[in-house]
Image (tube, rainbow, N blue to C red; front, side):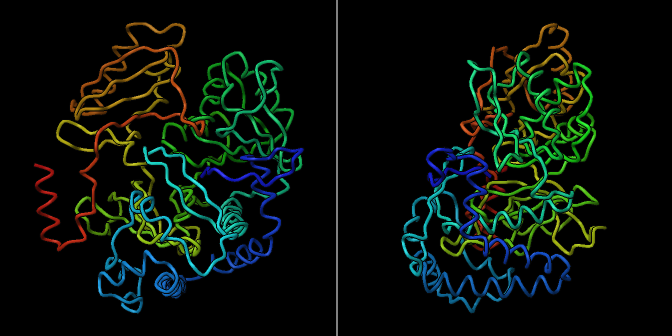
Length: 485
């Protein structure tokens, strides 16, 4: 959920892009945080009917506002001979077109609400992991405060308090090789921000020692960064940190092999959440299950299948399409996230009446395409298997259906036998439908957000393109039959 933001912190602290900066920016809008957090303490106990009624009312307000104050949506309504009153339930949203990332970029000026002063707009961007960096607007001071209220409500489920000590292992660069210190305390000393760019075999013992001294109650991390620490600890027989109660994973897909490794190594609960910088969807696990509980107060979520129709069967996968109820200054309605998720089945034992996702499979570009054009999620690659014990890092690259290049950074002790075992394992997982070539390299670079990208997908994934499905259903089915032939 990282974004680029303007510098507003103290000149001496230089807080731009830091976790502390985000927290301090809430202070001028504390009332927005408190109001949202207090509301969520009530709404989390609402029934399914009460939540549905709230969503319908919130959607009605949003559509009235968009029609009156947002030029882009006024044009969309008029082109379709619609008025906001024609859409009375979330299901009626199908009357409106999808909003793609290209649409957002090409119409950004017209997506700004005209009833807000220019000083209220804060321009932010996503990391561009899909190849399309996306710019949009928050309401300055308010959007972040509301976001923190939702995040705090999520983390409450595993006992998080603002006073707790927390180690942060995300995409930050801290310190330098000159002084050998790659961390600093933020948020008034309660968070230990650790550099993800200096985690090597040589420096990790110092990281571990510093974490033990800090005695954190939680670790907040990109899964790919936490795995670096966990694999080192497992390989060197280092025990868990006794004070850590949970690992809070977000901003990347959490693969099953990562969850298993982190839980075993740190000896605690691994809690994952799913959201995006555009603030259109937020979902997280609960005390009782690993299903993602979608906040209906945050936004309206649709799952759209490859046939362009809503996914209604639990266990089926579709693209996440979202309508934000959070950010009227730049409304995003039926926004294509390019994320894939599996529909869950409720109710959850925790008692919340929230809609569920069984799993979040990641971005659509995180799927390998087989020879027969099936999509295989990266969850199929189990790096927790002993087959990969002598692999330091790996990355797949695909530019042709049914063929992938696997780049491997070898550990000391890697032999030809490891290559043979890996190829056999992948052949089994890909059901003999993907040809794998292995190439050895010295290092795998990170994204500019400090993440590890396990797959670079260079195929046009038009098999998932639902834009044509705004037409009649029969035309849509014909389109997909053509693409699948």
